[in-house]
Image (cartoon, rainbow, N blue to C red; front, side, top):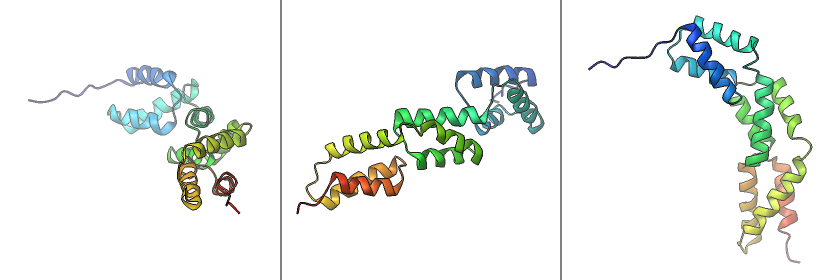
Length: 160
């Protein structure tokens, strides 16, 4: 029993990738991975990616800005995590810097709100352990360690 594999012409692949990119912002790496899954040859992948860039279906700066805004607003990720994820997607330093501009305005406010909300849920009586729980949570979310430790001390002061 042989399994038939769907093959695509370059034009069919272009149309399919147009829909794929129009659905949501994509980075080059995601598009290339998708084209490889479609069993496209490297020359065809280059032609299709160039076409998508030319027709503005694919734009790394727009992707980076959108990604940073989304992860910051909805998942409350900090600069460290967003930067790491963008680097994983092979986004350039310039585009990562542009993406960081997107979250600059509300950054401190979102951090303070998130930290206070999490601190309210921590029932630990030991101050050190409570600080550690808060710090671990905020570091996991990708907030800068200097901000995190300062906030942990502020929210869980020692009883003198």
